[in-house]
Length: 227
Image 1 (cartoon, rainbow, N blue to C red):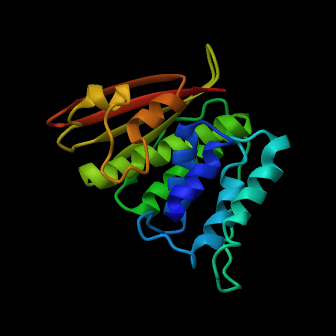
Image 2 (image 1 turned 30 degrees about the vertical axis):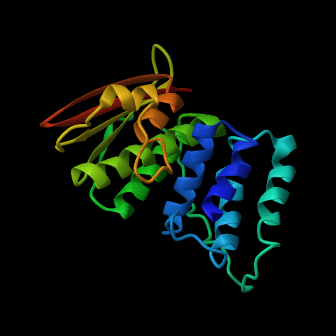
């Protein structure tokens, strides 16, 4: 029940959609499974959750969140010296006004991580705020994960737009068999087998504009986050 306990704490401080996406993204970055998560891995997960959740929680409430997360370890005997991985540093350069769209091939978890970091870096280079860039990175991670899990991979295209309004557009395409029960997925009545993430619905809720087309020859998802 460790993952359920973590989710329960996060839901006190942020919307459920954000809580689920933050938890799943953190577990993915540590290469851990929600089903197999135990006391030994808990300190690593909590250390990684603290920075991962910072853009979704009011700064005044962050100390309380950290305290509640760390309190989960007090009831278990956990070996010391288990630290979360150091976050990957992404160098961000000022973005040229004529920056062109960039497409990333997604086949593996490493590809998905690269696309997520690139999306975040581009958002920051465009002047996006922390919360906006976290939304972009989280949504890209969800789309890439879906491509790998259900379509054998795909592409993620990042499209910076400066006018008439500044925004980052993301276009994800794959050649899979399509998304069954799309209406149920987008209405929130569909529940994934893992129960851990909201996938496409989560992307929709994180976006300022969202479109999806799916069929037996593949799926195209396009969303925007306004900066």
